[in-house]
Image 1 (cartoon, rainbow, N blue to C red):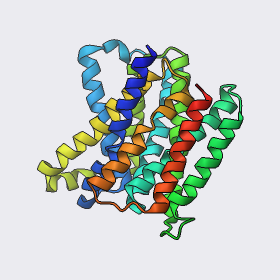
Image 2: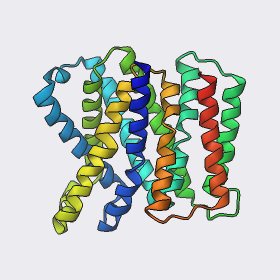
Image 3: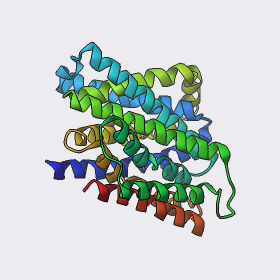
Image 4: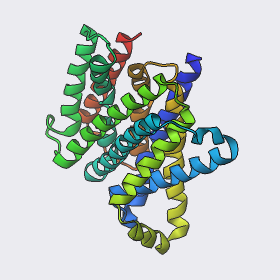
Length: 290
């Protein structure tokens, strides 16, 4: 069962890694980061609702306590996407995804605080590597251009994603239906995003070039939201939250490869060293939980 959970995490990580491609091609049409989050959440929520209506209507039956937990997950998922997209637009795809991928260390801190996990030497070493890697990736060290907004939003996405992990793990400990958890999380995410994103303007932009924008919008919702979050939620049934976050190491690797090979983003030596340090931090953290 754990092997299947590992596979779910890897596939989810690769799908998440495509987010930068969709943001890169949708941003020139005039969408803001909040509008991209609204599109992503709305498409994902509608797709999940239609699917479950025909194939699993039991997923719509939830308790009030579960709904409150789903609402918290949806809020932090909204925060993750919005901050992540702002970081991409302000700096670069590779920088944003690497900064957000400090989340396993934040998840570890949450796990120590809320799930009674112990703080070990290996975990402390992973924190040190993560901080050093962030300094190199962000440009604070290495003489690179430093984008304050991009760095802050990247780290904010990391924190928000960590909180999403914690609430999702609580839901799985309450034996919530993963399909219900994914559905209502996406619905709440979409509702929050739409309330901040000027929906009429979104419709107006799409109406200008629907043949180009609609396929990208659907891909953004399905490939970077419905499928990966559903797979990740399924994996959390069988894996501890810290290990699940660590196994997502394929996301920054795939996102960085996509940004360099397909988008032509430069990869300087300090950035490469920072990426390696952050990945080492995640691997150390994974080893400490082996």
